[in-house]
Length: 80
Image (cartoon, rainbow, N blue to C red; front, side):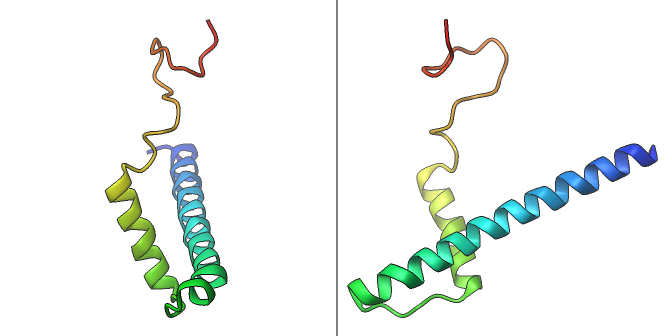
């Protein structure tokens, strides 16, 4: 494999890891800022926040609400 592709795959994997970690941190801080005070539930750890994030992606269909990027497919957000 070409060195260029190895660097590209590594950068893509690193970007995905950073984005997922960022979403986990957002869930963690959002939960710990609101839910313990409002509902009296305990604060989450980072691992619990990641599990909650994965569970919501499974239950609610992850990114189905976003527009598709497939060529030739018209969506509501695609201009005519």
